[in-house]
Amino acid sequence: MIISVASGKGGTGKTTVAVSLALSIENSQIIDCDVEEPNVHLFLNPEIKEKIEVKILVPEVDKNKCNYCGYCSQICAYNALVVLKFNSTGEVLLFPHLCHGCGGCILLCPEKAMNQGFRAIGEVTIGYRENLEFVEGRLNISEVLAPKVIEKAKKFIEPDKIVIIDAPPGTTCPTVSAIKGSDFCLLVTEPTPFGLHDLELAYEVTKALKVPSGVIINKSDDNKIIEDFCQKNDLPILMKIPFKREIAELYSKGVPLVIGMPEYKEKFQKLITLIKNLKR
Image 1 (cartoon, rainbow, N blue to C red):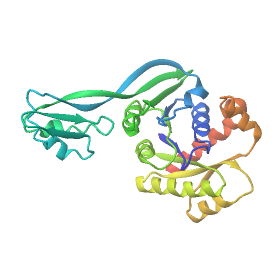
Image 2 (image 1 turned 45 degrees about the vertical axis):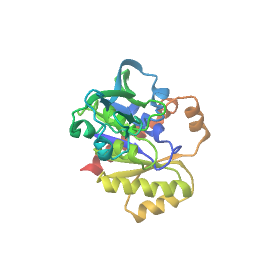
Image 3 (image 1 turned 90 degrees about the horizontal axis):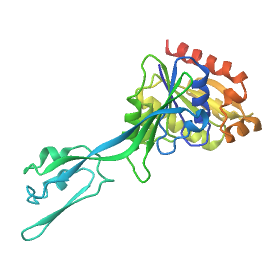
Image 4 (image 1 turned 135 degrees about the horizontal axis):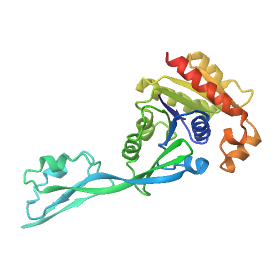
């Protein structure tokens, strides 16, 4: 079973939930797909076993074959190529951060002057904390193709395990890439107007992806703003985590909730049971 943990905004406690859930169950795997700012490792301190570079295809121009016709720049949907032609020569300019590695220019070049090259945009790290397998995707600084790194990290999913995916916050392409293919999505929110607004957006994403979802209310208080929305949309509330100073202190020290407050371990184990029952 693949369970993604998402939120419409940052700071709701998404990583707290993902780490606590992974530490509460046997035969689990956690994949940090928040590749622009991964932080699961801060709570797990895993023993790192392997690092794999993530590369994308980029074109390399063979100037001995290129006649600077400009066809490659015409077909590039991302405007990553510009061809400058002078009287008897020319230049092909590649803007690598715009290139999505589709390979269209290589395939369709009339002169076969485009060759395959590769460029590193991130890395995937694999490690362990006792029996818990840890996978992290990390996008290199200044790179923009987060979905490519997320897809690479998800290739290490172990289908015989309960897989917890810590998705990026928000509702952009990286979030969609992380949630896509999940059996269930936990939407972590907080009882504020901002929390409600972004929960609505995140819920629409799960509906569009046809991934069943449920809500965890973090920093829960007497405000019923989230509960009213969930009741209106027949969206199950699976857990409430109270607004407590002790929980915030644990987070600030990098201590997982179920380690610092062991009574929560049983609650997260019951959460897995609730999810399995909703999936039947």
